[in-house]
Length: 183
Image 1: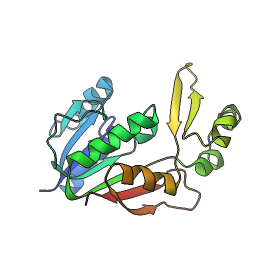
Image 2 (image 1 turned 90 degrees about the horizontal axis):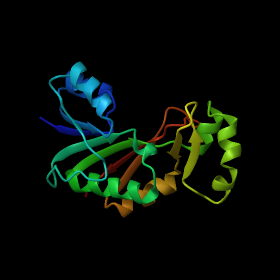
Image 3 (image 1 turned 180 degrees about the vertical axis):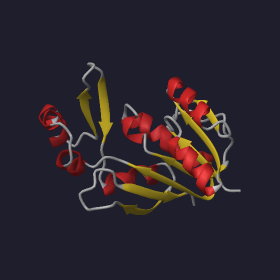
Image 4 (image 1 turned 45 degrees about the vertical axis):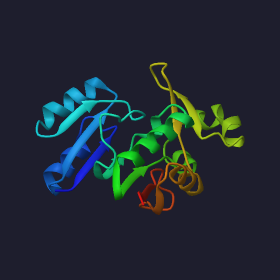
């Protein structure tokens, strides 16, 4: 049975699909304990845990056939993001595949991001900063990572992964997916 690591799994929706519909052995984690509580209740046959993506030391090297995430956008800094990618490379088996999505600036502003997000971050965008700072309706500051295909290739290569492909539903999609492989 193929093994998949779901990083930043939230309430386990993707984990449930991978295990239930595709028969994969899923191990999943999130830093949010409340989300993991919900996931465990919804999908009791999946191994869920509370864990920080920068430290996956509970998993041995070369443990998983694949890893997925759509939460890499919310890792607070570039350095922490690189730690996460390095950990993913470490836990993937040789030949293992990593699939993830990242916001694109074009898609964010074309499809629904608040205009104030652009104006409040214009200096960051012009200086090439990879994070936009957003204050939600509750006053919480959230850093949203965005990337270009060249940036994704650079990050993956730095982590020891080989960039394979980028795909998205439409050219303006704000969630392009990247596929990489551990050599």
